[in-house]
Amino acid sequence: NAGVTQTPKFRVLKTGQSMTLLCAQDMNHEYMYWYRQDPGMGLRLIHYSVGEGTTAKGEVPDGYNVSRLKKQNFLLGLESAAPSQTSVYFCATRDSYEQYFGPGTRLTVT
Amino acid sequence: GNSVTQMEGPVTLSEEAFLTINCTYTATGYPSLFWYVQYPGEGLQLLLKATKADDKGSNKGFEATYRKETTSFHLEKGSVQVSDSAVYFCALRDPRDRGSTLGRLYFGRGTQLTVWP
Image (cartoon, rainbow over all chains, first blue to last red; front, side, top):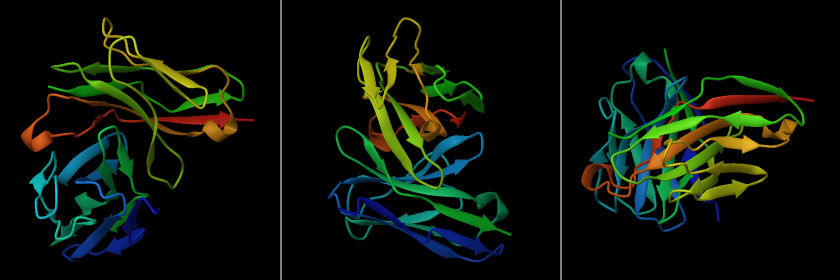
């Protein structure tokens, strides 16, 4: 089992460019989450999904969009990247007991 | 609302020293409490958890006790190792969360631990 994987691991964007981060899971979990991690801020929830075809906003959704077309994949999109979106992005899934995190994507917007 | 406050870091210790990382919480209900650990370059991993008052979570020599009277969940280890160097996050989940926040975790800001040989 690969668990939760994220693609890419690193990316540098210029302001205004777009990109999509991919999260994939092989645990057949319904719930999936996207967090961002910033120094001294802990993890903040961007968007989440409670099942295939559903998405919802979290704590800091502005500037991001998501899609869950397949149960195993949860995509996070940045349509027009801004320097404030420089961060480490973590995807997570959960079962009844805990959340399982991917290894993260480090994104720098210049 | 729900929130988690943990002690500011960084924490630097010598090997075999005693570790305490303080965590207190604010919650509207009776939350489940977690400690996650993040090793360099990796994602978060669940270290231990407790789901009700007076429960003690333990794993890899780490312990934390759910204290409802002080709304705390302090992480302790009797003798740290260099391999324990990581960032530690305290988190809570409110079982009453419904709708837009169902199942989400509320994280503290993280505490960087560095252990020297």
